Length: 218
Length: 216
Image (cartoon, helix red, strand yellow):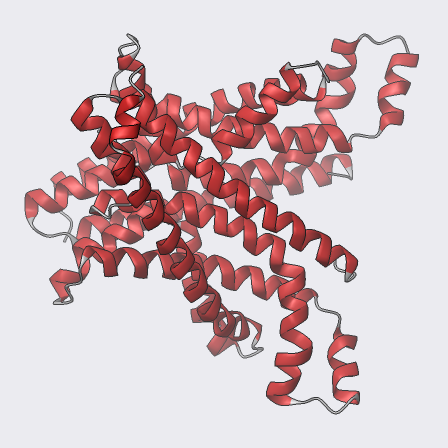
């Protein structure tokens, strides 16, 4: 075991870890914003609107993330749309995650008791204020833990971005191991860093879970 | 038009993807059940060790695991080819998720039934085989099928270590023909069909069980 390589190449691994964190944070935040309109569209009672959105969401949830990355990376340039690997990685990660977030939010929305909305209306809330003050906070509280678990999936999917040369944690670890031929040491360190990150998210999920139970959501 | 070469290559890639996924699922199911039983057995040290192992592997991306298996094992003197490394990766990955599924179901299993089995003179093994397992696997079925679709969606990770699965066939065909749209769209479509088929199979099994036994 040559763990001195880890110390010597720590800056590469740390930079990779930082890239993983910010790309996941950014894509997670963006997909949360995009998931709201998606969930709203899925709740519409008009088949003409629901059907295409439903097909998109289910289709995305049925394909491997790497296929979506490749579709963007190899196929879009043929149509004259050429993006950098960063744009391609961030956009595909966001689109893929939006499908899952959208479905999670729709589920929480559908399970929100009808009375909540009625009570809100009785107190004079309507339109955007009703959505913002009564519906959304409750959806986020009840969906919080599930969204958190999806963030963990997002973090693990981000490792696929190494294939299109995004220097995230797995790419960095693979580079270091290939140069020094220390696959075991380097990749175990990468695994430990992923574990650390996911455990942190899991900790937040547990807190959100408690909040949800206290607020009466199962 | 789809050329013959493309069709044949895609079929081969599909077969490879299905073989490694099935092998991973089958091996992962046995190992996952064993892990769950060991963890619920409340043995000191071992229970904690398994809990840490499961937590760590659950947090590891499949690609990272694939690289660790493929490059790490030869480094400690265990020669392994990409195909075997691919199956091993998927097995390690899915077994911890399946362990969690089995554990949840074993924990939910009514205590009274277990005690009734012992009262009727059954041994641990017999009670597990005749009373616990037949009920537990039915309850675990939806979660297991969900895990299978997750495994299938993670399986392109083996393309990274050189297994010519459906994803790698698409990459290869697009670089050979300089025509990426067709192979990638077709491969995507095939993944969708396999996932939908899995979900349909689960619904069929579920409704058959409901019809035959009245309960799931």
